[in-house]
Image 1 (cartoon, rainbow, N blue to C red):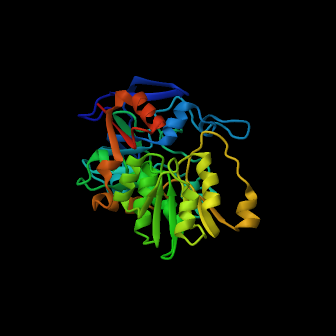
Image 2: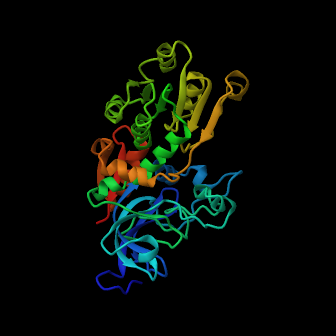
Image 3: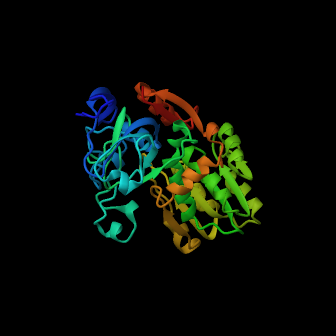
Length: 364
């Protein structure tokens, strides 16, 4: 329990026990040890992954091929921002922080010892302690949270308000996906899905100056925001043959880079038929169920380069800069701000997606 002056011993927080079983409870405020940071949570976003975890997706709860990733009981929330209210011994020096700073920890707290960490590929850390899913890294859907000593912490300018700063994590992921696409000046690039990640990808891809940037989504109002993010062309797969339209724009070749972020199996197949030979396909979705495709297209037919994408690897500083410099229409992307107690309502909004883009929770 907290014994720091001015900080309560108890807080309200959301606890995940099982799919569909998320409860608001009174919890102990975390205590900080050496090189740890206590923050008062000022905003926390709901990721599509959070919503799929709530819905029981096998990625989080396991199946015949995978161990469960979620370790209940756990406080969820990996898209967050907080105000520094306590610093354990050595934390101020290690992270260059002071009380009152606005700060974010990257969503993964690496072990720094496994093969991937030793190679600098910390986003693939073998223990893979991501805030809001593992016991070692309790999440942000509470009044306070602790950034453990292994965290990667960034100071965020106070000119970025908390509800916007909660978008740093998804934007960092978007930037990483765009980098995986290895976009060249001559390329025609397609981003499939204009949710929070997709819109961040459109904004980031625009900064690569491709020959043409195309955004796809089933909702026209989201496509309007994609235009504000920098899309040259927007297409609704529910209203036209997007494969034919993209081929028409490219002399029949197809797009050079296809970034899939809709989480829809249809979008995966669509991309394989839309992309040009020798193209680059980037997959950055969390799928509720398995997706099957004709791998002959990937190999013998088109000789595609397929890249997965995971987390925001070395991209947080760029995400912070984009938000601080107002390089994307963030107030259009953040469609809802709700009190933390409305977490289930927020998850429902994310799962339906027809009325929301980014849903942010504000602790009471």
